[in-house]
Image 1 (cartoon, rainbow, N blue to C red):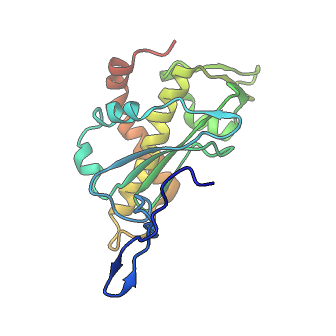
Image 2 (tube, helix red, strand yellow):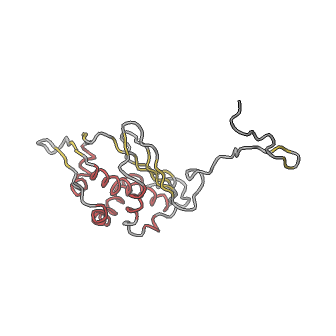
Image 3 (tube, one colour):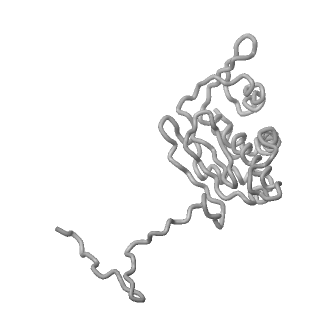
Length: 204
């Protein structure tokens, strides 16, 4: 039994019956260059959650000096699903910040800790170290994790974008790699962090 009126004559044009549905794939900002920057928020995945919303991204980029120039060629900012040890990524005009693990306490790699200790202290992250000052354990809060995602991860991936935009073809990621992106993040952080605290508040 049919509960709705069935359309028996979808239409004829030039002697051919027209399809009743649109079979063309809808344009995606990941495959078609959008007219303006897109902020896309995906499901975080099991064991992860998003600390950031689209409005957080909009508020944060407004704090970055010369953002309108730095964002040239940037098509999508993706609040992506969680990816284990991956905090963020960049690929040809798409910048991703990964969802945060539901675990808020974990051990840090010693080499990573040494390179980021001063930044972690600046955002008020609570850390435990042994008597040698090594083997650190970090206790994140929502506020400190959010500050880390925006003021370091986002800026690091923006560094990869800036590196790419300085290449001749602008097709592949920049040649200077991780060292350039890290330095870029720390340089921009110096200009952004106080503005971030004024806009988002001090971490608790």
